[in-house]
Length: 72
Image 1 (cartoon, rainbow, N blue to C red):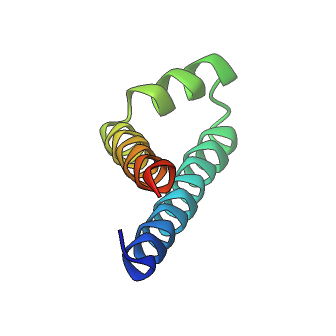
Image 2 (cartoon, rainbow, N blue to C red):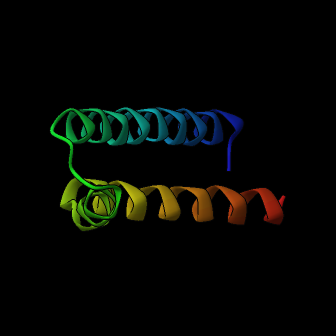
């Protein structure tokens, strides 16, 4: 795989990771202001469809990148 493609995958991974982290932080911050228990915050984070999709996409991107790095 060309270096340019791997760089684009790395950039996508970084952007998605940053977005995931910001989204989680926002949910936690708002939940704490509302005095929601930590157990409920954690279950909300795990059940969040957007976060779930981001995690799946990140897993696929990382596996794809690693597969091509190992083949070179």
